[in-house]
Image 1 (cartoon, rainbow, N blue to C red):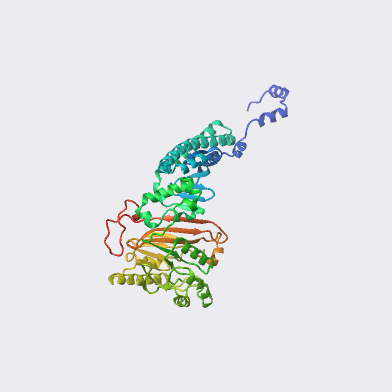
Image 2: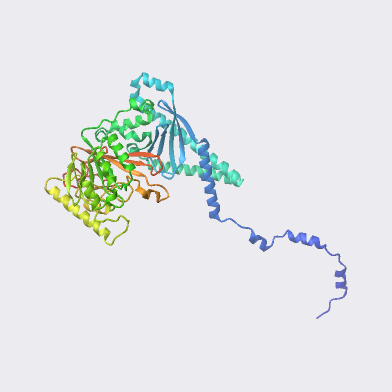
Length: 528
C-alpha cells in the first residue's frame, strides 16, 4: 500500500477547526427520524368525528340563539322554533293550560310552537264579530304557512352561522369553517326532506295532551261524534289550538262533554297491586267520563292473603259495575271475597255475562305466583287457559249470544282467542300495548293502574299509573275509540291523555274485519 505523503496530514492538521458549538447548532436544525415518529398524526375518522361534533353543536347553538320567528296566528302571537329531537313531531305549548303534542313527522328536528300572548285588538274583534270565526281556520292556515317559510329561512341562516362561527373558533382556518357551515346546511336540508317524506297530516286526530289540557278529550266530543262527524271533530281540535277566546275561557266557551246515549264507556284497569291511591283515581275517572262499566284484568292484590281482602272494600262505592278476572297475584280466597260483594261480577272458566249492554267473558289466571316465581309449564298452562276461553266463546256464538269483550290476565292466554271475539283485554306486563292479531281480534293490554304497587320503587324511575277509557257503539257493540291515560308514578305530578282511533273508523275506511263471523265489507288493513 502506498504511503500518504507526510505533507498532506500535516496540512490537514494545520486547517482551522470549526467551533463545537456551531456544529451542535447546525445539527439541531435537522430533525431526526425519532423526532418525526413522536409527532402524532390525527387519523381521518378522528378528524371527521370532530368536524361532525363541531357542526352539530354549532348548528344547535345557532338555532337556540337566532333560530326562532315571531308569528301572528289568528288572534295570538306565537313563537315558532326548530329544536333537535330524536323522534321529531310537533309540540304546541299553550301556557298556562299545558301542551299539545302531535306525531306529525319523523326527523331529527321538532317544531315547537309557543303561544306567547293574545293580541287584544284581534281578540276583541272576534268577540265583537263572531261571524269571523267561520274564516278563522283559513286565516290560521295562511299564518302558519307564512311562519313556516320564515322559520325555514331563519333556521338555515342560524345553523350555517352557528356551525361556521364555531368551526372558525375551533380550527382557526376559514376553509374548515366554511366546510362546517356547508355540512350544517346539508344536514338541515336532509332533516327537512325526511320530515316532508314522513309528514302525517292525520296526526291531529290522535293528539297527546298534558297539563290542564289533559281534559281535552272531554272537550272535543265523544266517540260517536268522532266517527260520524269527523269534520266537526277536526274543527274542534283546530279551535282548541287556535281560537284563543275558547282556549283561555274553557269553562264557559269550550263545548261541554255531553254523553251520547249511543256510546258506552268502559274503564279498563289492571295490576293495581294494593295501591290505595288507585281507588281515588278510578272513582274520579268514573265520574269525569261517566263510565258505564269497569273492567279489571287482574293482579288487584299482591300476595292474595285473607289479610289483604279489606283493601277491596272501596270497589262497592266506585259508582259503576266492576268486572274482574283473577291474576297470578290473586288467590281463590281473593276471588271468593269479591264474589260476595255487590255490584262485582267475577268471570272465570269462560263464564259470560251481559253488563250495561256489553257481553263479557273471562277466565282467571291458571298460575298463582305471588312470589313472582316461574313454574315449569307456565306458558303451556296459559295457552291451555286461553284455549278453554276460546272454546267457551265459540259456544256462546253458536248459542246466538256472541261475546263482545273477552278478558284474561296474561297476554299469552289472550292471544289464544284470536278470531273468536272482536276485542280481548289483558294486563300482567305493566305497560300498554295494542295490536290487531292475525284473525282480526284486537288485543288491548293495559299498563299498571297501581303504578306497579310497591315495585314502583325498585327501578331507577317510578312506574307510571296507566289506565284507559274504551268507547263502544251501543248498537254495534264495537270499539270506536279509546283514551290512554298516564299519570306520573310515585312522587310525580304529570298527566297525559292521548286519543286513539281504530283505522277502520277513520274517514274512507271500509267496515272492520269481523272475527265473530258476521258479514263485513272488504276489510281494510287493521292497525292498532
